[in-house]
Every structure is written in structure tokens, then in C-alpha cells.
Image 1 (cartoon, helix red, strand yellow):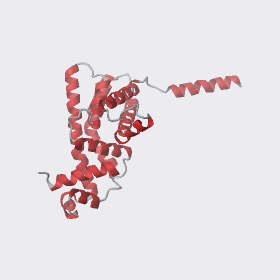
Image 2 (spheres, one colour):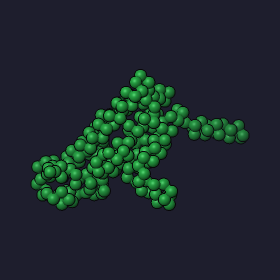
Image 3 (spheres, one colour):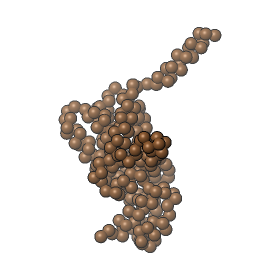
Image 4 (cartoon, helix red, strand yellow):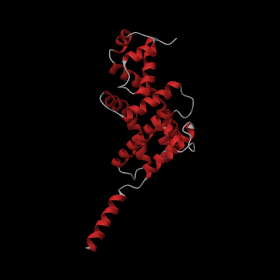
Length: 227
């Protein structure tokens, strides 16, 4: 039997994912959970604390899955660096729930996580930073061993962009089916993870530096010589 606390958390997770944090009222959560406001106040004291408890529960589950994947890849490659494709899968696969082995709640949390990354404002930003640090140091170290030629600053930016692409996929994947007129199937989760992984890896492995800046500088020099 689901406890009152878990019923509140499950209802809040679903509503936050569907509507967003700001648009979800405590009344809507208590109605969905079949409890009164006093139960929310007893277990969580406030909406912010409810969000923190919900996110901590989900991130602990997510990070356990990520760490397990990293452990398995590092054991597979032993003293060698783990290929970037594997590292990216460890980062995003649990978020996308592509294996089909996770609970429905994991998928709902994935939607919520996408919303949190897309609009990290107020308490959301603090919660995100505190929880992603538990995995990010391990991921960063593995990434630096795999791509030692890429400057640390670039790795931070590229990892940041990778999370942005994943968040967009989590909350807006159905759009690709509409835009492509059915050519792309967002419900084929393994295809989604493969294509997103290929996209992210290409960005991570791109040569350091900015070709755009160099091209503009060269064009400026030509213009000056032509005057």
C-alpha cells in the first residue's frame, strides 16, 4: 500500500511534469493525492520543501542508474578511457528511460527534469545545482580522460549544451513527429537515444577553438587589403 507521503510525492511529480512548478497549486496536488492540506504541511511544510523532497528522490534514483552505467563501462574498458559514446549514454540514458525497465514514475520524473533544466528559476536552480554535483564530478573526470585534447572550458560548455538538447528532447519530443510528418518517431526510445548520442558526441569531439571567429578575422583582413 502506498503511504500518504508517497501518494503526495507521486501526485506532485505528475502534475509538476505536466504543468510546471509555478502553475501547479497545492490544492491540485492534494486533490490528486486524495489527502488534505494538513497532510502536505505535516510531511513537507511547504511547496518548496515538497519539490526538494521530490527532486531528491528522483535524482537519487537517476544518479544510481548513471553511476551503475559508468561503473559497468569503466570495468569493461579497465585501464583504457571509456569511449565518448558510452559516457554520453551514461549521462542521458537514465533521463530518457530508453531501456523500458524503469518504472512509469521514472518517465514522469524525466519530463519534470526536462522542465527543471529548461526553466531553472528560484528554488529550482538551487535544487538542480546541489543534486547534479553528485554526478557531474565523476562524469567530468571520465570525460577529461576520454577527450584530453579538449580544453576544460570547452568541455563545460559542451556538456551544458548536451544537457540542453536532452532537456528539449524530454519535454518536446513529440514535436519532431509533427514537424517531420511522421518520418521521425519520438516513441522509438532506442532510436531517440542513438540519434541524440550521435549528436552530442559530435559536439563533444569537435576541434577546440572557433572557426567562425577565424573566418571573420580572415574576411576582415581581406576587406582591409581591398580598400
